[in-house]
Image (cartoon, rainbow, N blue to C red; front, side):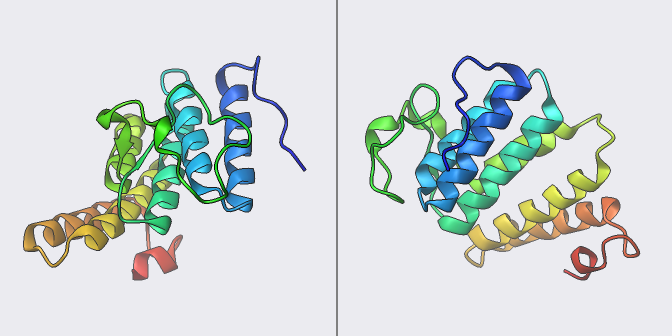
Length: 171
């Protein structure tokens, strides 16, 4: 089943529809399209709804982290066209510039910055935990990177309490 069209929609509705297309792309194994849809969804509501944008950036970072340790470029102008590349393949023609490459770490940091001065403490804690895992995965045994990951885990514990989040707390 094809998700509803996003053309003509704006604001949070557009972001929601773009995210729906991202999840459909994930289901079909087309990771680069999913990443592009999530990026465009987050960008479309960044100023309007920072919390929604933060969730979308974090989801994109988690997907990117689960698929590769290398940054993946985002689409040139809006969501990727329907059809196009083979499922799971990345079409290099969609690169705008080097600034469009975002690593999982950058995605989580963007999400955390958007959550500043919000009341979404639990989300903030979860993203600090995810940032720590991304830093640890990219550390390559470097002490400074591992110490930064530990700092992120400590920050996560400020927001994730043992009684409400026992699994995350145990990590």
